Every structure is written in structure tokens, then in C-alpha cells.
Amino acid sequence: MGLLSMLFNGGKKSARIKELVTSGAMIVDVRTPAEFKGGHAKGAVNIPVQKINSELAKLKKQEQPIILCCRSGARAAGVQAQLQKEGISCINAGPWQKVPQVQ
Image (cartoon, rainbow, N blue to C red; front, side):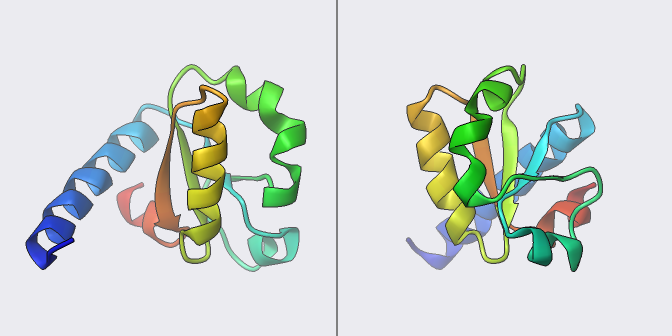
């Protein structure tokens, strides 16, 4: 992906995340409880990667896309793929620190 594409897609993604945050979307931080305790986005729910399967029913009940985040975006990307296979609409916000920037 070229630099311009990364810049423009990043802007669209940030705008989409801001739109979802404004409309009250669920923010799911998939880091460990210890990482979450060290800092997290306002209103985020901590569901570690290892517990996503046990929370699928709860996540399927969400009426709008779920915002996923973690430390770097890698774990959130894996969870995003898993949730999308289950028919759950979600977006990977990347690092959790990006979410407060659009809140």
C-alpha cells in the first residue's frame, strides 16, 4: 500500500471510528486485564482475546459495529477476522490510544 493510500484510508477510518463512538458503539479492548488496568479508552470493555469465544452471544446482540482495539492493532485484527466470520460487524481501531483521540 502506498503512502498516500495509507494516509487517506487512515483518515476515513478515523472518521468512521469517530462516527461510531459518537453514536454509542461498544468499544472492546482485547488486551489482557493487566494491560487494560494500565490504561484504556473511556467506556471501553475489556474482553481479552482468550475470552472472545465465550462472549460471542453478547457481541452478536450489538446493534451497530463494534470498535476493537489493543496495544498495536494486531490482536484486534485477529479478533476482527474472527467476529466477521461470525457475522458480527466490527472495525479495528488499532492501538487503544487512538480511540480517545476521536472521542
